[in-house]
Length: 283
Length: 321
Image (tube, rainbow over the protein chains, first blue to last red):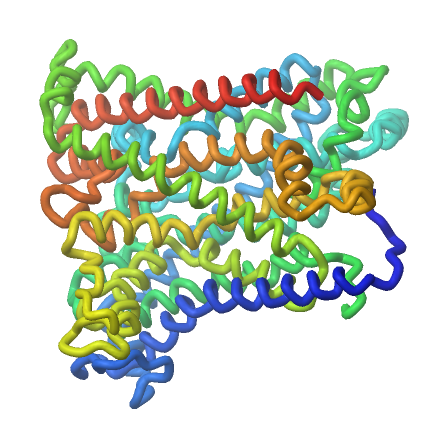
């Protein structure tokens, strides 16, 4: 399916390449500026009258927005909470998803079909539709105003989709491999840990990155479950920072940059795996 | 993603259910491995869905125990003007924004699936906004869209005088005019079609190369290739993604409506069902009523699934494989 040998491109093909590169440049020009503006807005001096003309580089460049965001918003404390949630939830979530995906790939087809169907149904339900009942359940269990409801989605593998991705990955491993493990009398858990998991390492890397980004960005759950300022995660602290003074944009944009950096960093590390051509000659 | 597409063609009967089959002890162990996920699936999705169904028929304010209300909540919903506006807004948003998002993602995928200089960077750029936390992204747009000092209107005013654009018109009042605010929410949502884009990129790369080579030999124009080859081959994926996006649109309007426009400008121009449910439940503490609205949301989801299902089936009839 993937052509390995392509001859020298004829002339119209060259023109098409040029157009495509121009298109790519246009895409970059549309999608990158909002994020550049986020950075430049956060570096504007707070309290100055807004300039009448658009500025990409603020004058003067000032980090006062960051200092105030950290003071006023309690962003340090909130970052710690966010890190705490991520450190517990992300490994747990990947563990649950990979265990479940492996079990689905090895169990009887009928059991698998039922669980896969249930997972697809769960994927269809919009998260906002579950707000009220989930809240009622967590309140009944006395777990509101703790970080537990923020970690709980890890039991779902954060999204049933990730369980299904693991299932497909484990199912794609050759049957001989599993037979060999059975002959060797390896238990399923050891087959999973010693044989199967190392073979799907790229999947684990990608899903860990996605799980981290989703967990780190989670805004809806803390909004519903957490009221104690000391338990605020970064997205929630950011929201209350913006309510403090909605006109002082450098301050809340500085907070937004702080909240964005970890997610974006993980994304940049991970995107090479699933976006770039592995056979790119320039690499 | 990559694992999924590689698994496809060789899937049936390779791994699952090997001839010997696991013995009883192994099966028990496998069941234990599945157990945490099953607990999550039941406890966090299926059980809450059932609780919604029950709460929708009660008056419940968290203080007193739920009281049976029969169909009161539903009759109240039908007469509630705010709910009707929220429902209309939600459907209009889905009808306008979802096709735009899918088309944009398709355009980007077709433009960027090849190896050309700059394509790799452009792919990453198109995905960047999706990786930004929702709330940070919302706050960014709260500033960008500010009618007075937001950069977007500053750019629009370049060359004009007295706060007008170069064409002598008033720039859009993103946060205060109902129509402009709805347009703003759609604009904000367009930048975050990254997931759809990635899937379409993978789908386009998986299309058989020889079909395109044949079309090139027959001197087919670009439009013909798109209409006769690319579109029919990708239609099932597109339908699936449109469905997914329509359902997701019930959710992803929440943060932008909550943070950027706060449901306004009056009267409720950008109040969507998600915001309505949140406000009814968590600001006015009418959980039974919010559950009834949630139920309407789930019915909408189901309707979207059915409509898409029919479309796919009709498509199959026209283009039998």
